[in-house]
Amino acid sequence: MLLDEDVIKIVGIGDRALTILSEADKIIETRLHVDLPSEGPVSIPAYVVYHNAVRGPPCKGGIRMSLNVTLQETIELAEIMTYKNALMDLPFGGGKSSIKADSELPPREKALIMREFAHKIRAELASGAYVPAPDLGTGPREMAAIFGELHMRECVTGKPIGIGGLPGRLEATGYGVAAVTERAVKEIMDSDISDLTVGVQGFGNVGSWACTFLSERGAKIIAVTDYKGGTINREGIDVEELKAYVAKFGTVDGFGGKHLSNEDLFKLDVDILVPAAIGGVVTEENAGDIRARLIVEGANAPTTRKGEEILLKKGTVIIPDILANAGGVVASYDEWIMAKSGSRTNKKETFASIEKILTEVFDEVLSFSSDHQLPLRKSALALATIRLVRTMEARGWI
Image (cartoon, rainbow, N blue to C red; front, side, top):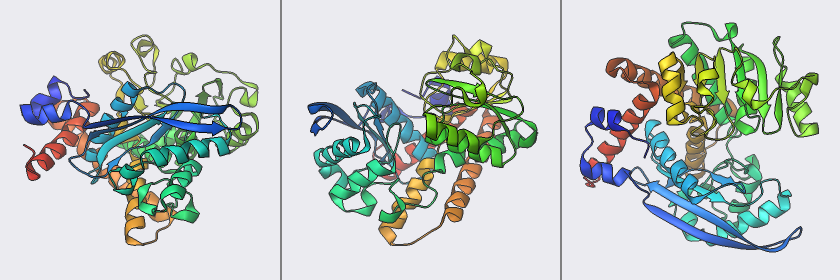
């Protein structure tokens, strides 16, 4: 459970509400039976989890595709979505789904898997109980496969533009990371982002766009890594050139003739560290080596509790995942509303919406942190929990 004694005490949450939030509402385990051209008939485990639906339906959260996914991880990610959606004050419960398949499969084979997934949970999608979006290993093409099964624009977000996708949704999470980072630099570090250096772990959707928008705001990106390795340039990395390199070679490793390991990234003398790859990478083993003054969690759950304890004692500021990477779900809300209303928008309006909501919520979290002398993560969780409890009261759940 994400909530600890400090948050429970500050919020004054009752036993019934705590019981409701302490476990997943609904868990679906299924298998996807697909004939893949490269492998033949396969049986693929898949999971859908609704952690809490008091602010829904729908439950909202992405579809992760990886050979490493587990049911427990899916439950934990769904819980994160409950608090993230509540913190952003969105009318969504927290959900998540995972498919235990290789995300590096050919696009047509991934589409076959996604169509079978949509078929298996068709009732959940068609009723509006669950609205998925892209996550690790999935993107607009996979969301298009889901839309192709149901032909309901509101049943999935993160779609391609031509079938009701939102302009700017692809970049939304990375844009939000950059917006929150700049706000934190100004309000907490009393500095200008153009004076600061940044190291980024992960150069997928979130990491690459975070690099783009941080660079546009004036930050100096000096190091980037992915699962194969990384690159470093103290004078600053040209992000567009790096993107072109990755498109050609499939990795950031070796860009500019330089090599940097993920382990060494965390030891670098940078002002800001953005873990934007996978969870559990900032731990008690490496937290003591981290020199960054500010950590912005582009990934979900990149920092373990023991790792965070070490960092907080050092005075490191951590912008938690439920705030830092919420730009994606804010944009998903805008896409969902657009699908239901028939309205239209543009990329500029999408980015303005993300900037406004994340900035306002950041300021609210910072104020709560100051008033209650709590770290930002606990403050964000407390505010989200207050919204959840009030909704439970309004619905007669407690």
